[in-house]
Image (cartoon, rainbow, N blue to C red; front, side):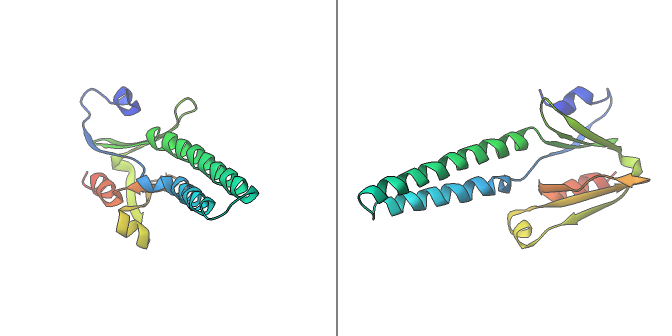
Length: 153
């Protein structure tokens, strides 16, 4: 069961459910590419060098797997939800950190996207409220949809 369903009020409706973009796996993807390159290089060398290159490829593959699992865990344990009353941001599973802000207290919602963010539809969303704000939400998938769900209210 997801976190936000446990904290919804009786007559509160969900407008938007978001999360982190798949580009959070970029380190794992790069490490896997290096592992495949090392495996390909393993075919062109012989003797003792082949074992060394194979060990390096195995190490990079192991690092890619660990990086993937870490990013996957962060991605599935992060929730960004906009309801008709508030914004809920939850990170973590056992050690959990949550932030909530009433929709009526939101002053501005800033979206920042670089070239990669525009191409792959991810970005950083900064929500500023009356009297303070949140730390920016980085690598959010579909940041403009999140912004629109917040400012519609």
